[in-house]
Length: 302
Image 1 (cartoon, rainbow, N blue to C red):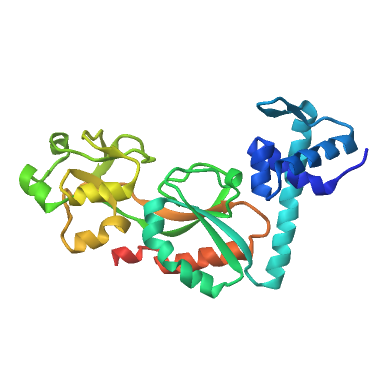
Image 2: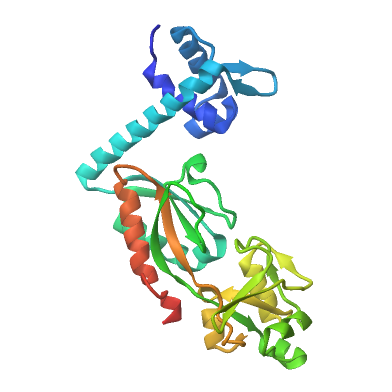
């Protein structure tokens, strides 16, 4: 049996991406080159690793067993490279970031030029997506997450508090009245964010009691920018994070109410896969953006 260590990252890419063509795109190779590397690897070790059909590929039993070792080998090699980069003390390489769309547009993108000016050897690939995706499967170095974190092996660093308020435009409140208690909300048009991690219900706290309400309304959307637009246009009311509405509250284009009903406290985090040697490019990005956001209360609330 002859090992071909250079083919291991190719094998892992095929496993993680589910096809030769997707692995080829990720590796910057042709599909035929990927297929040939896998065939040579199989010939060298004398074992078939994939079952191939015209429509799909699946791991054989031997491939399943080998994949765990191969993935660990790639992880260890990457950690070794990261350790060498850290010794050099110069952030460099491609930094892949996954972050929610509206928050990133407002509070990450404005600082990207300054960050890249500080670290000219870093290239940023920014994926803006309101859905929570797997950092490992997506090959991301760091992610920005808001709200309650799912249990995982990811390491999390708090960047800032995330405060939310119940608000509406003055025009809407003048026309429909201002709610003063929880029951009043059932008579109002409540705008719903469909990707809210807390589920369909709105949660409030008053007098040490946890209260829930399922909002009713005629507009459900998966984007916070769209919610802000219809709020400003007087469509209804909504729970909104202050990192989106702070400026509109100061200008009184939006007004808060029922302030005695506290909303759940959340935070904004940087998350990254657990590893022995945190790449310098990740470390400096987290420190940079934490400083910009404020660490505790976000700068938008000050």
